[in-house]
Image (cartoon, rainbow, N blue to C red; front, top):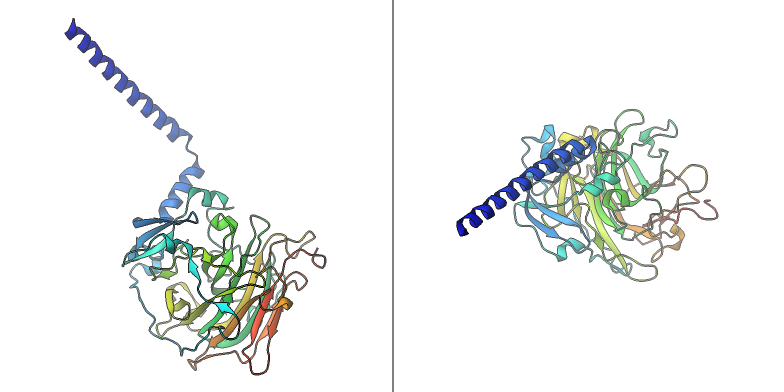
Length: 418
């Protein structure tokens, strides 16, 4: 009887195992059948963007940072960069100067990225912020994920003039126009402006541009941004961007496409910044510099002398040699700008008007260009521009014997900007 009982128990276990396998296969088939084309496209996009990690760091701000082999970064998905050899340091370092405003203003450059408190990446790797499924689901289009929306011109103003009006964007900036800029830099005051609508974003940044045909330009950019659609929160983050066709089909933010070559294992593109300035209290600033070296690579450096990476010559056209335009300032993207009321309440800079000056308005100090003289200097001729001066405005504060300071920003919707 005991043997019969054991045999029955064994058969029961085998039957249960077979049922488990059957239902598992059935569930797999049902899942495979019900998996939509969009879900499969999302999975493919995630696999393309998220490279295999040597190490993973969970940041206290919720970001997941993957330490990726430097030669397996997204840049090498670009057809023109298949055989590219990474250059770890610039071949040309411009004449340095003390560009800190400490001593002029009560500022601090002790800015850091939040993820750095949770760990570091090993040598031979770079940190990449992981893209998640929910990031893609927030995007209006998987094809355009990680890109600025295309610029649609309001008029036929030439891009060479430096003053070009576009829809869905409100700009407030200082501009220098020339023919041989090989660099630009500034200390950018760091704030956390309010972004009212999920699809809006706001920046404080540096642009270097070159005309690329009528109403078409290429641009390399860096600064800080608040972009809830892209990053999933309202944090202030370090960003880079590039395009060679006015944001139409090329370029992206950070490493969300192939192009920018990242070289620094301690700085993550798209990572949160802190501390943040507050009205009437401690002000924080971060130095950004973009310049071309002897090999035509456009390098990004932060904190005066820390290389982050570069835009290689293979991804640009007229910018291969020099920029014809350098801009310093802010931009608000929204479908509720330059249109019928109500205007967006998304802020630029500190959210305060430029006339509030230091401690209340966002500023850029130590504004500099580099030309073929290879010297770092203040531009000989500059102009200011605000697309919607009742919403976001500018003030270039030039005082005798002092370095000029550029203020910009605003609250967006207000009684004068309904």
